[in-house]
Length: 347
Ligand code: GTQ
Image (cartoon, rainbow, N blue to C red):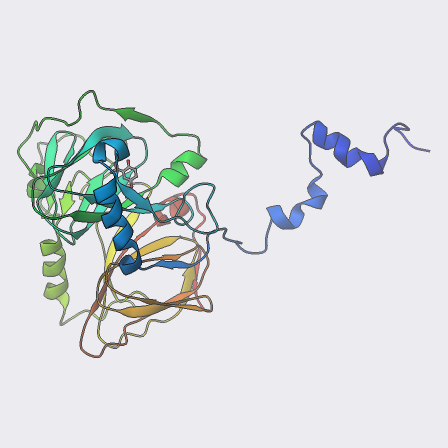
C-alpha cells in the first residue's frame, strides 16, 4: 500500500524542483564536505606581465571614462564574483599626474598598499593622506574617498577590498560624492600624526571605532619596527618576522573584515608548511622567492601578487643568502575567527 498513490519517485525530483524544493540525501557530500573544497585556486600574478597593460590603459583610457583605472586580479575559480580569493579582492590601480579619481563611498572596506611613484594623496573623510611606496592607507567602509596625483610620473598601488564578502551578504551600498573631489577639512595626514605612536592615543577623541582611525601606516614606520627587532626576533617558523598593522583603539586588525600584515623573510628562510581556514593575498614588497601552495610551486618577484586559499598548505622560501624578502599580506582571518570557523595546523 502507498500513502500517496499519485506520487512516483521517478518524477518526484523534477516535480519538487518546480516547487523549489531539494532532496537533502542527494546533496549531502556537496553541502557537508569532509574539508573545505575552496573554489578559489592558488594563483600568482606577475607584475612585470601586468605593467604594460596598466601603462596602455593609462594612455588609452581617461580617468573620467574609467572612474577608477584598475586591473582586477580575478581568481580563475571565482570569475562570477571578481573575487581574488574567498571574500577578498585585489586590484592594481594606476593614476597619472594631474588626474583625479572621482569621490565616492561604499560599504566595503578598502585599503591601498603603495607600489610605485609618489606625490599622490587620497582624501579620506576630509583628510588628505599622502602616499609613498610601502605605505598602507585605509579607507574603512562608508568613508568618502577620492584620489589625486600632483606628483610626477605614474603612481600605482594595490587596492584591497572586502567587496566579495559584502556582496555575498547582500550588504553592498555605494554613493557618488556631490563633487569630483572633497575639500580638505582637517590638516593633511592628521590621523597618522595623532595615532601612529600606537601606545599614546589622544584622549580627547571620543569615538573608539572598530576600524582603525589611522589614514596611513607609512613604510618608514614599518622599517623602524623591523630594524628595532632585527637582532632579537627570529619570528614565526611559518611566516618569518610577521607584523600586524593594528587598530590603536583595540590592538586588533585594522578593519573588522581584514587583517593586514607585513612579513620579513630573512636570507635563506625556509618556512614550515601550514594551512588554515583564512584566505590570504600576498604582495611582494621586495626580494624574490617562492611559495609552495599544496603541490604547486610559485616563483615570485618584486611587486607580484599571490593567493593562498582557505585550507591550502603553504610554505615560503627565500633562496637568497644575502637579501631579505618582504611580503605584504592580507587575509579574511578576522571574519573567520569572529564566526568561530578558524582552524589551523602544521602539515
Ligand atoms: O579606489 O575606490 O580597485 O572603489 C575597486 C573599487 C578601487 C577605489 C578598486 C574601488 C576602488
